Length: 216
Image 1 (cartoon, one colour):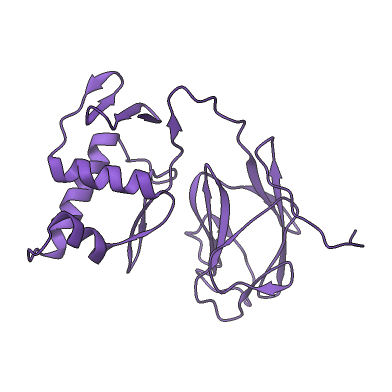
Image 2 (image 1 turned 180 degrees about the vertical axis):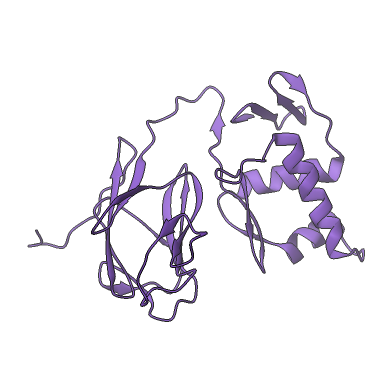
């Protein structure tokens, strides 16, 4: 099987990584790490589990996995912080969040995810989008009832998910409190503390929210 990701092709059968058509050398353990992330995408994998798999029954320092991850990122050109291919889950591990296409398959039209706030509309980019009061987040919300890093929306080829980041006033989706990562759909209604946000997913790949009988 050959997987395409941006300007790279990963050939799982021949164990080759091509970038712009040229072979990219990759150490055996770096290859194993890349393949594991691709096969489990978009699920986040714990550092401890990855270390046990890559170095079974062997003690290694935390820097060993970090150095291996750096090698993988250099090999696939994962240097765009705004659109990462591999997401670092702080305090936990890593997840492959970029778009991947099995070569020979036809790519379905992608959904364009947007958030509608009272005063503006914000387009979400592929990968992680942080929401909160910090000026460094992707979706800045100027309200004292919103935490600095309040919630996270991850946009991938399978759709978008919402996760609360331990905010003080909580996150709601369609009136229900978000305690674990949940899938988003077109026309979902979010509340970050007192702030209401509408979700729009435009395009053929956009999932539709199912309304209960008698709903509007």
